Picture 1 (tube, rainbow, N blue to C red):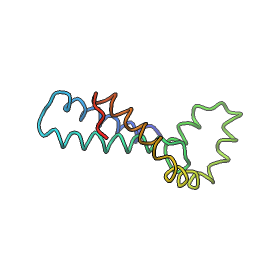
Picture 2: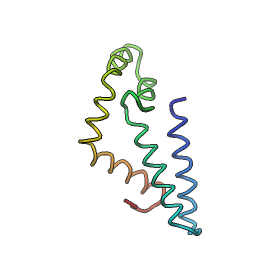
Picture 3: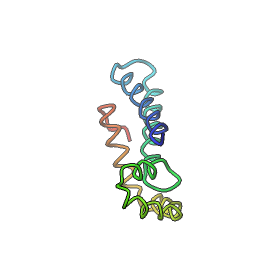
Picture 4: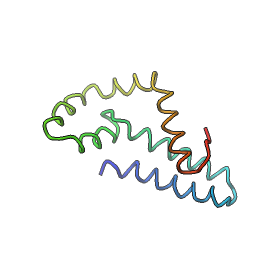
Length: 108
């Protein structure tokens, strides 16, 4: 269930990317839709407690590690705030990577 939100974002970005590759007008609109949805999808998959990425990671962990991971939930918002202020280059890299894969162009 946690993958539904980011999955919908990536699906919309994929549709917009296909329209970009087909050079259908208005291309600026499709670029904006692709960029916004990829940014939302990547951000939402960050493994911090209020975001869906935390539950995705928790779902893939073995049971013995899941309890330790879940005990960090209460600090998730602090980790998220710290990441927002310090992880800009990492987030930009991830967004550019997905944009390049989807559209074949580096748009940011």
